[in-house]
Image (cartoon, rainbow, N blue to C red; front, side, top):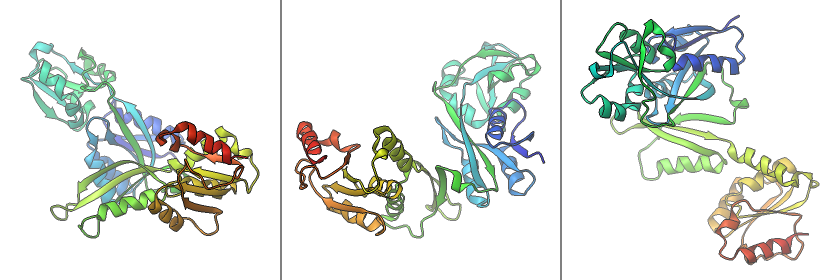
Length: 357
């Protein structure tokens, strides 16, 4: 059965382009695309089981998070993000009239904001008028000599309109992340995730404690923002994006360095081990005997707390320039970032070579 995919219409929007790409990435066979008026309509179709998937913008590189989408993800916890894509956004000024006669500029609020500097410099007296989509704005300016719309160049063909200026983005690298939403969770297949939470109590250190838990699991937090909870003033929902970059990064370095060819039980020295993220990965996935060292007693304490007893890892407080190991104690040295922070890099290198077999 063909999947019904809702998106912010009408036809010709960036959302439609994203819908086609994301549906292909999701392996939808002959999807049926359903254009909607407004993001609320798109999300409600999915929330009330009137479509199989929804394509919505969630973040813009200039204007930040798309609040309608963020609020909906909190309101409807049964909706999940399944796929994501980033599209470059290049806006054109489109009209039937001439630039000198334009007194009103129509577009989606995000598009108007993304071109606000250009408008203030080139059309300072024009009134910005928000619409549900860039495509709707283009339809509304057909036949008008004093109205212009902001949208994709692909919309110019609608009604025989013409391009007055391109590109008019304030930021050349403007791009938007679109996501495919559905009621099917795919958390086991993803290496990128988004989640939201609210704090039980508003007290000093509450947010820091929550963020420390994310760091303890080795997740790389790439974005954090907040939205009002709509329950009471001063209460917020925290939205976070993170990825399991630590695991992937370690695997890639292991392969690149060739230490994956070492036999199980090989002794690895992890210099600058922090709270032990890399050490645990090396021990768990490659069955290495890992010793992690750092100059921070607090990090060693936390590393020991986070490391299961079944893993062959131990952690010690030690200066990398004055190692307490005998010559030839290790089969390999794992040092990703420590070297850059050493005052005497030659001494550091000598110590690493000394403890290698």
